[in-house]
Length: 191
Image 1 (cartoon, rainbow, N blue to C red):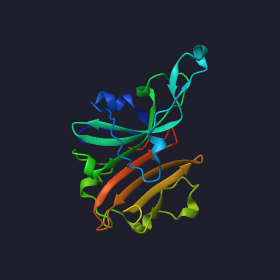
Image 2: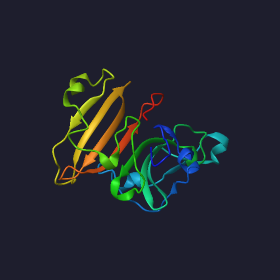
Image 3: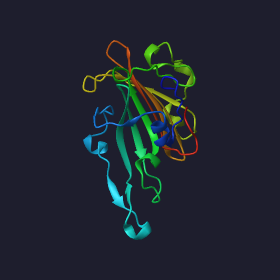
Image 4: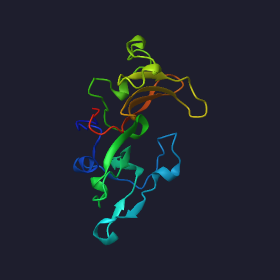
């Protein structure tokens, strides 16, 4: 939830547009693992209709804004029939506390603004990475990275060799910086 708005990943971008979000010209580069090329919308000619229709191609990251708040979405075009960006599929959402004014919560009750680095997670309830193809959620915490400037708590699983993940970012003091939800699976949605 972002404020009172509920989102399930994956969904169409038009779901965000209906709630007042719009594409921003700002590039905040919230994903530390992607370079600026990922933030460019690329177009290609559709093979349908004699190649006359431009469609979003592949995957891109776009910034959305609403009332002074900003989020990032990972978009993917899954069909040659798509001709409008609002029909693209949102596979991932990134929210950083310094760019969002609204309260951000997951359906299980974890909220970005009140998240504690150690207290919200039970270390023993998640399988090890050797179970990665089991469909169970794996917990992979990282040490603090001086280069990136955060701790990363990564919950993920692979279904049919496609990744689902929820990632929490904490600063050097253990305060919550942001979260990311990603679902490259398709039919299995994350709320």
